[in-house]
Image (cartoon, rainbow, N blue to C red; front, side):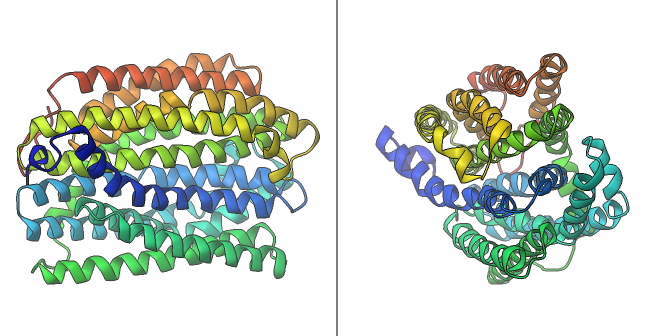
Length: 442
């Protein structure tokens, strides 16, 4: 159905966006809640456990984050086929994404296991902090295949305009993760290793749930479950530009973590907590972007450019409004945050200072994440890759001169401003609005 006929007015657009975004919000928030829960529990362990968690989690997030195209590209491809009325081929592409996720997950786990000490050293970690970070990272690598299967499975369901099922899986997975972490870390006394084992178990069970759901749907529509090597290669090729785009995003965050680590234990501890809060809010804002991916892919697949444009405008307004609300929430909660994470002394002081830029950047982030989602849904990967390179280059000089944790976060603010400019200029034009069941990048 053309989007214009289903959502011809502002309120109808809002209903369509919220139908997808509200469940996506819950599912997306569950991921940073994994990290927030880990931080709260590990924060009760002796130093430098929290800092080690920050270093290892940053490395793990970088590895998994590079593969986020498994969700994004699959969402766009499946949604386009759905919009064009070809559900069987949509599920065939979804299965290709799952096979690609399994292959990449196994390869990453095997390749990174012996490199764990080197990876941790890249963040400037030494001594006991490095030892604990290596322990957490190596255990977590066992869960990489499951994590990537979760990404691909989520992408298939989002492309089918189903964000409720990922919400149910995420809530169950988060609950299990919290219970296992409390038991392993505080009950059994496994320390930071217990936190890693709890997350691996929860993510692996979530992957099994997605596999069962996608396989059942594929069978119902007559799609083959066997790997199609040509399809797997095509899925990998289509995601390459998104890998470049994601690598640029991860490079910015990795540089920030590395610089904060070198500033001292208090700084990396505060930076870890601030990053957790930023990630939590980013995933919450990204719920609208997920709606943008699904709506844009489906609308362009059916040839509805007018509906795509109208929905984009509404989603940008939602992004701005949510960004303002999150800014206010951070400022109101700011005095309570150090106690929540058991931060004291200089770590608490650094955290209170850096929460100001974290809060004030939220309205900008609201627009950036929405436009990013819209262009991903349109399959505009090539532009996103080039924009990612340019905005990263804009960030590096500011990061290089950062002498404090606050100035480091101001450098991140400059990066967000550069992303806003590049995405807004693209969205204002029409080159990204390519219609049909498949897309040739403009």
